Image (cartoon, rainbow, N blue to C red):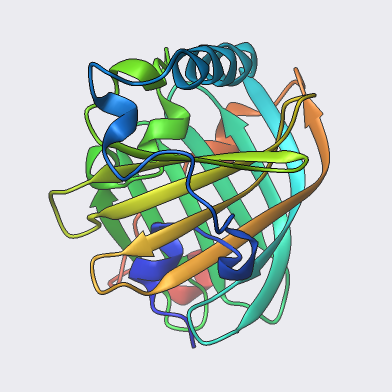
Amino acid sequence: MIKPIHLAAALLLAAAVPSAPAQAPGAATNAKASAQDQADLARISAYLNSIRTMKAEFMQVGPNSELDRGTVYVNKPGRMRFEYSKPSPYLIVSDGVSVAVGNSQLNTVDRYPLIENPLSIILDETINLAAEKGLTQIERKAGQISVTAERANGDLKGKVTMIFADPALELRQWVITDGQGQQTLVALQNIQTSVTLNPELFILKDVNKFADPREQ
């Protein structure tokens, strides 16, 4: 079973991470970053900023090769919903302030601050990767480009690697590496942008342990 903290940090295909770095770690935020890096970061930031709402199917590969599928919804700033297909008991909802992890088998909802989640980088109102203090790496290979950024504080500290098709930019997948070095991959399919989403998708209420089950 995938631990909720890995799910909340949300997800990646480790084998898909490009292998040949274009810059050493940290070079992307260095004053001597190449013109190519600066241009690519500006281009990717503009692409991410153009996405306000999104719906896509996802495939998730967990730290121990666990496989899950489902639908992801995004409504920026800050709101995201991972709706897992059965038999997974999990539902993950970010309301812009916290990331709530629901488990229907245990009848629990656990919450983590969104700002401590590396995935918050994707959900920001305005994304400027060139100014992202945690940016550590840009990697390129034929037909794809990836950017890695790190959030170093909190229970959900870790890094996110966003992988894009290139040169026609499209977010294809991301990889989350948690504080223990475990990786989770999320690959996207059938991406739809500029869609109308019900605000209730981004609300996950706390469980009332004292409620009458007949009233729930």
